[in-house]
Length: 284
Image 1 (cartoon, rainbow, N blue to C red):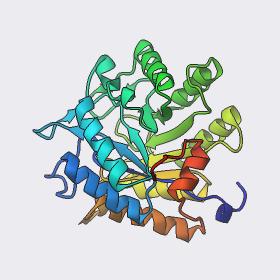
Image 2: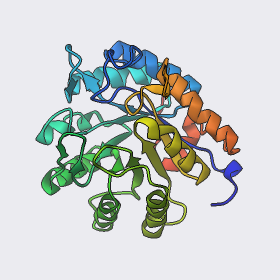
Image 3: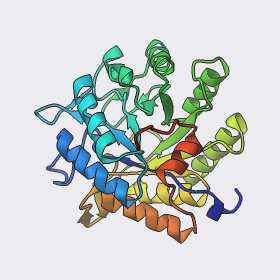
Image 4: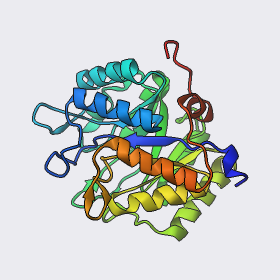
């Protein structure tokens, strides 16, 4: 693992998601304007990737490319240099509508390469849709972040990288703590890390996300193991069991505190882009 002091940690903030509402936590940013303001605060607190979903006028999840375009433009203006990652997740649309924002050429986009159970439904990612999304990401030079809800998803990403459907070494994010999917299990987590390094190389960057009460636990596991971490109101609306998070920035500050606990620097946006092999923006 090496000296953690020499390994800046990328903090990703998942600002909104498809499920949390103002009723769950008034700080959840729903409108594009709220999302931009919340992201700017999180950026200033240390987040260098923003994972984005958008909502319609009723606050329901959507894959509307125009909404994504408005959000992307605002983030580029107010958070110069921050890595913009758009979601192609299945709660926001169906079929190829899930990738309708990829022609906007964001820095990154999420890519789930297999199906799994969610709390009340199957999160369906059929092989033909996965291949189409991956093809669009290659066309528009968008780096995929592999959303690994299961070990098989890491192995499938390796197959897709080997046969050229994924252009660069995948950036894999372990998602743990989703009900009916993979729980936050330390032995499994350690095997995920082992598998990613075995398949893609010891120096490959990887990330982990914990859902709900698992968020802080996964932040600690990832940061202390040399990986990168995700936080934000999409995954967890609380600071602790009794306290709602006042903002996305507050959750980012918690992750930054964990970095300090393990003597890891928080990555700047320049370092994050270098670690992930992303182009530097001309106007930042």
